[in-house]
View 1 (cartoon, helix red, strand yellow):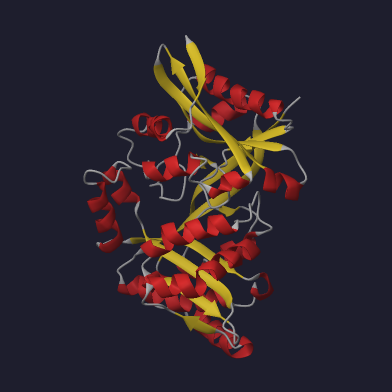
View 2 (cartoon, one colour):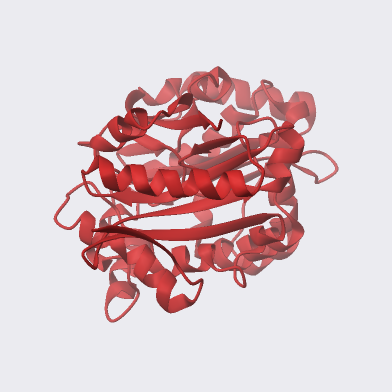
Length: 376
């Protein structure tokens, strides 16, 4: 007997909801678990500031008392207002290869969405654009990253079987770190520095980067990403949380800020040594020894760097600021022994972003998709 149960948003119940994927992907060499505590925080109304403008419920599927699937139903009112539509989202979705299970989970989200006056369901998406999103449809034999979803190949077949169609695709690239900074980047970097009075800013103190540019950095992201698919503007409380949770973890050598003559931030590039293997060894848990593997991932030898974020203020886009960022970052990649760089998901139509990777000999190795179903 198959049963769909709504999950109480307590930390204990949300932990069970989150840990379902650990069992589903046990032994998979490409799956990278999240930090369970991070996912629990994301789904907790009292811990995630996105609940100021979002609402959500989580559901688990059980067959004969055994968990066989999970899904979250989400509404982002901010995005709905700016996009002028009535859409619910599904996210945090995992299920065994059984269409009865996936169908029952999706049907529960659709029912939830109708009850709240929504006209369509899209996903996989989370609360905001800085969360994980998109169903993997290519690259199942590639190692996942800390910032992306891994799923089995049968997921897309299930979504399509249940009436969902493509809404949008993201692509990802695996690249080679060049042996030296390309001459083209050096030349463009010098031109934009002189033409616009730009300068490269580096930090040795995490406190200083938080105090001086923390809020400005996330306001820049809001400006730079505002026109992207399903982007949700970060609130002040969200910005405070991101500053507190993440800026302190960064290797400052891999963070480059570009400012103008008035010391206003116009561009930022944030990279991080890949945490994929460390997270696999930790099993997504800090205790008892997960923290040790994560620390080694941050500080130890690593041949791969994740290009987490590149953002340029709209009035400086397509003017060479990206080249200036990489003039500073590429020597750091070389110094730290990185051989490969991995991009975050980018919209398949975003030529401006994809063109910036030309110096890295890029190879598209993953593709992921959001699906939509219109409710009758």
